[in-house]
Structure formats: structure tokens, C-alpha cells
Image (tube, rainbow, N blue to C red):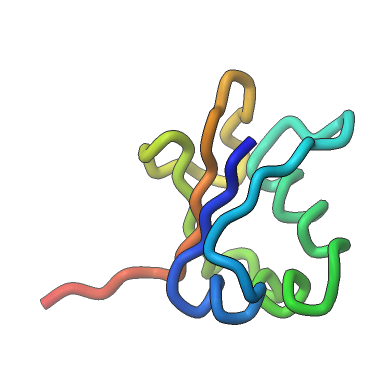
Length: 83
């Protein structure tokens, strides 16, 4: 699965994107975030408050309970502001 990181999420992790093999049991975006937090200090820092990080599966905004079944790409980004 391809993971893409934007803005300060990318800065904290240190990469713009990566391809990962998900371990068994990772079924939702929330599960994915919990697993990513275990992958190192940068990931833990990026997702220290998962409620503020937004996610999109295959370019569709989703909530943490969204299923990863069939997903090709998951993107993570901070909240957006508009004006």
C-alpha cells in the first residue's frame, strides 16, 4: 500500500511517501495510524494527536473507522483552513 504524507506530517516523519506491507490485523485507518506510531519517533510525533490528522483513501476523505480493504493509497495531512 502506498502511504503519502503532507505538510507537517511529512516533515515529522521525514519522507513524502512510502510503500508498506501492512501486518495482519490492520483493517481501518485508525489501525494503520496506531501501527505507524510504533514505527519510530518521527511517526509517533506526527500522530501524537491522531484526532487532528486527516486521512484520504484513494483521494476520498475518510474517518478513522474507514476500511482499508481494496485501498491502494492512504494520504495523511493536517487540517486545512480556508479563507
